[in-house]
Length: 294
Image 1 (cartoon, rainbow, N blue to C red):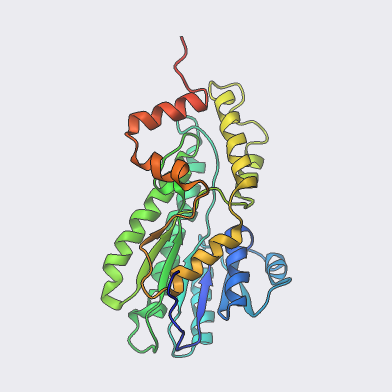
Image 2 (cartoon, rainbow, N blue to C red):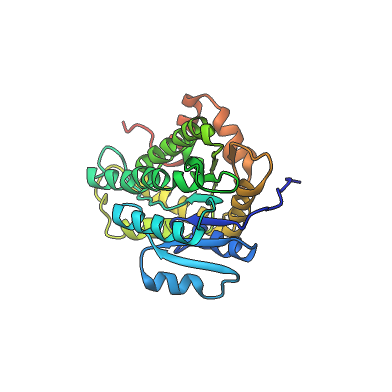
């Protein structure tokens, strides 16, 4: 059982992308566990929905990670609430996913993934490092940065090239931050879930509803892949389970550098990450009808 450190200071955390899915579940779970939770949402209506049924101190704030002025406003709001204290944690959860073959996917769609998942993550992280521990005028233990990556941060699947590229970047950035921010005692931890019951793949299906790749050689393989992703999103781990892992990452005395809450972990993560790449290529090619045509 993971050893959880007893809080000596009031605990306060910021979660980005809290309107739905993992972020929503984490906001509810952590506020119920006694955290003051600042939950980033993109509209007031999202904030009202988030508050519904929540226990504890849950405070929605408008935060689009691609908009510097909203990030600056969030820093000001949270800094004022903290007083002289440090922020316990930053949970980088905001992210998007759009399916499509890299050979055809519009560059603007590829760039959008990086704008949110990578540049947005770094923008927020840089803005909150002083509150987490680099500002010597603040009191309390240094905070932790928890970044939600994905199985896709270790395994690049077909039709999610843009998404998995950003998640590979998030994994590398987390390792780099952990090594650099040791100077201030700030830890950086990655959580790479497998299939989770969240709306992200339903949103991806909606993006493809007009069939942007219909009539291409990828139409049939992409449909197979889309069905697999939707099934995983509907039968995956409950988002609350990921929220509990986030709490562990924030509170454990000796947290892991990376957590991998993955259903059927042996077959869905452990073995694939150890297979030779050419073997894994063959599995993907066969499963999604990508064999070379005669």
